[in-house]
Image (tube, rainbow, N blue to C red):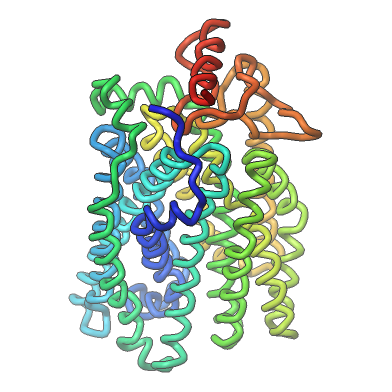
Length: 485
């Protein structure tokens, strides 16, 4: 196949709208539980906030399993198939949560409701784990490498749109129905509303074309699921560890700082109007900054942006959370401003974790590799962040310290992996090798056998990983020459 056409980003939106709509809906459906946590606490978990957040974490426990299973489905049968399965699983798991019996209907009905709630949350986790791997892999394989980051920011943009809609619908329902009605039945409405746009996205995914890179790889390889899994675990376990650490900062800032932070504000007495302003402000700024972050990443590289953002969060994370907590009580408008500006900057510049992870794996195992490494990291750092933050919230500084440490984990993971790449121990780029960590006009930690040109075909290995020596480099250069001519 020749090089992918260098199409404007808006054309990617026009062609793959169903993927992007589905991604927004996935995150809307995935985040509803967190914003409606007080009502789940009262209706299902008999007043225990920690156990309620453990129910939230159940979804994340299932995500690595979904990432591997649906990722392997994508590597064996096609990216289109796995995206189709993921949206149906998420849609069913969400709408049915709005129909569950609670302890208001008696102890037996409440026990049944809790059991089915756990099952549906696990189903959501499996679907979400497959969604991020399938859609991210698909988009990176059909876009041109020169605008890779600027196209891929469509993923975090639509994720933030879904996150924003979950906030807006949840807090808007509180204002419209009132506290008593929300506790009784109003909490169900946001879940039931997902059925209509979800069905539209599912129907739209039926008509998307399959990734040509996958079709070429399928022709060249007839490996089974077992052999692909063995190849992934045996040959790419260092990349899995890097992907695990790469998502630490963004997972904690999203589910600990932003999500748990809004629920904590409610429990401290901040009105829903202020919480809506804070959430809408942060998500709107993330969306507005996304094109800039994509451009910087296409100039500097995903590793450079991730390191910069992680180090900034390590320094600023703890004082930011402490200032927000103080402002909730004494100056609500200051809390809104600090929340919106602080978390939007972290969320925007950490959104390139998606590109850092998808770069790690070649096309043959990319879907499963992204699904496993990304979702293990999100499970550990994101899924349990609200529960841990709730458990240590008796102090004003421990949640902030955890936020800062997650930024340090991402920065150190990236820097250590770059050092190992420069020594030839690990290859971090399989889509384009430049830019990745460009500093002072040059690539600072190149792979020893890496080619000098950054014009890699999307989906091909940016550095030759199956062959050794100068012959492999010459072959890649000849491929580039053929693309140019």
